[in-house]
Length: 263
Length: 294
Image (tube, rainbow over all chains, first blue to last red; front, top):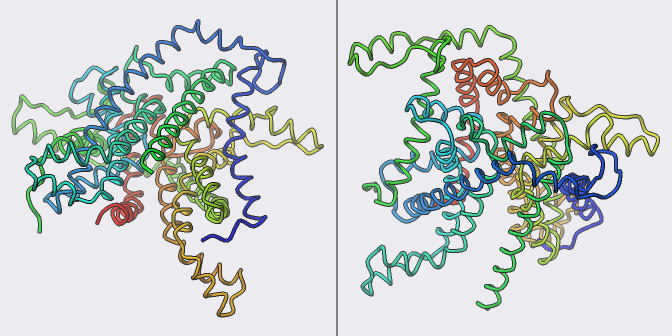
C-alpha cells in the first residue's frame, strides 16, 4: 500500500505520537523543577538528582534490580534459545502443544496471576523469599518473550544450511553453533535486551515473590508514588528513560553499521 | 508423525513445568482450601509423613466453600463485571484510535515508516510504571491538563481516581499493541487490489470499506486479543489512576492477598479470572501458532 498519506492520515499520526510522548516529555521537564511540586514550574534545578545520589535505599534497590535483571535475562535467553530450537527445528513431537502453550500463555496472562502462582510455589517449597525467588520469577516471565523473539528469527533461517554443514562432517551441535547461531545472533541479543528490560520494569511479580529486605527499583518507586507525586521520582524516571534511549540508540547504530557492511 | 521430544526441549520443558504448570496447580488447590490464622494462612496442609492416609484427609478437606463465599459477595461479582466492561470498552477505544494511526503509517514512505514504527516500539522499552506515573501529574485536579483548560477558559475535568482515568491509562499503555498488528497487515496489503476496485467503479471510501477493511480484520483481531486479555487483569493502572470505587480483578487479587491476607480468596479470584480468559487465550495462541509455526 503506497499512496502517500492524506492530511487526515498525517493528523492521526501526529496526534498519536503526541499522546504517546507528551506525558514522558512533561515528566522529564518537571524532574528539573526547582520546586517541590511537579505541576507548577518554579525554575531550573538539578537538586532532585543530587537528592537521588544521597538516597541509599533507592541506590540499594537499583543494585538489586540490576543483579536480578542480568541473571534472569541470561538464564531466560539460554532457555528461550533451547525452546525456540525445539519448537521450530524438530518437527512434531509428543508434548509439543503443551510446551508451546506454556511458552505463549505468560505473554498475555495477567501478571497478578503468575505472581500469585509463583509465590504459592515458593511458600510450599519452603524457599526463603528474596533475591533468588525474584530472579526465578523473572526468568519464568521473560523466558517466554525471549523464546518468541528467537523463534521468529529462527523460523526464517533455511534449515538446509545446517544440513549442509552436517553433510560436510559437522556434529549437529557444531553445525548449530557455527552456522545457525551467528545468523540468529542479533535476535538472541534482542531477546536478551528485551528480557532485561522486562525484568527492570516488573512490579507485580517482584512484589509477590520478594521478601523483606529485598526491594527492586519498581517496588521502591511504587511505594513512593503511593505517597504522592514527587520530583525525585521524576528524576530517577528521567535517568531510566535516558538509559533506554541510549541503549536503543547504540543498538540502532550497530544495526546500521552491520547493514552497510553486508551490502 | 510424532516423535520423542528433542533433547533441546528438556531444560525449558522442566523449567516451565516447575515454575509455570505446578504453580497453577497450587493456585487451584489453594482456592479449594480454607482461610486460617496461621503462616501460611490456609488449611489443609499436605502432610507427607502421614502417607496415603494424610493424602486422603487432605483431599477430603478441599471444598468449594471459597467459591460459594465469592459468588455470594457483591464486591467480587461487581469487580468481575467491571473488569470485563472496562477492558472491553478500552479495546473498542483502542481500535478506533489505533486504526487511523496504523493506516496512516502504512501509507507513508519507506523511511518515514521505519522511524514511526520505531517510535511506536520505543515506549515498550521504557518503564510501564513510569509512564503511568507521568499521567498522575497531568490528570490531577490541579494538574497540567486542568491548568491548560483553565488558561483557555474551560471548566476543569475530574479524571484522576475515576473510571475515565483508568481508561486513559489503558488506552495509553496498550496503544502500540493495537497499532503494530494492524500496521503489519495493512502494510502487506497489495495496492493493486484497491486499484482494481477503483477501476471497477468503487469510490476511494467504498474501496476502503469493501477491500482494505475486511482484509485488515485479522490484524484487528490480533490487536484486540493482545490488548483485552492482559487488560482484564491489569493492576498498576486501576491502582494508580482509578479511585477506590474502581473495581478490577487484578486489584482485587492484590488486595485480598496483601491487605486481607485471604490467600484462598485471592486464588479463587485468580482461577475465575483465568477461566474467563481461557477462550481469548486459546484464540490468541492459535493465531500466534499460525504466524510463527509452520
